[in-house]
Image 1 (cartoon, rainbow, N blue to C red):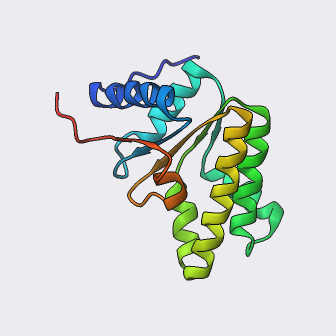
Image 2: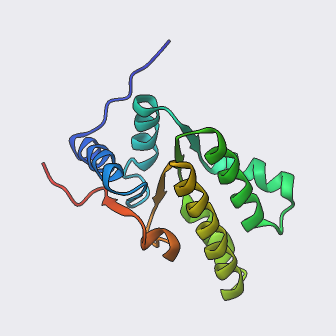
Amino acid sequence: MNLEIVLTPVQQHAANSLLEGLVLSPVAVLIGAAGAGKTTILQVMQAMQGGVFLGAQQFMNARQAQGPAAIEEAFLRMIEDAVQSHDLVLVDDLNLVTNAIEVGGDGRVHLLDAALTAVLAEARALGRKLIFAVEAEIPWPIRRRAHIVEVGDLVD
């Protein structure tokens, strides 16, 4: 059975804004509270635009392969692999990665920033587009390059 996902008007507006933003910048961020529909929006965008969807399950698989202490390396490897083979990479639940890294202190945050800077540079060099979904905080390397779309601020 193939069920079609239908977005709410607010979610559809966010999806349209992301698509418009990708024309201006190869990096976009979808920000919103838990339950706002970020995952659903990314899944619909993947169905419409193609690309690869990377969520918590893919990150946990990559982390197991790298070892539990190698959070930044696992995340970097997962996205690098996706960028190499897909024009569009949709990364859901980035906050799960940033939360896990924040437990390690400022040094770990800087390692993530370095990894993100490398991934963003590689994606740009290859002409790839990236969309990240977060609940609140956007890591600096992404925030300074991204078109940001917030889900939930709009009322129809």
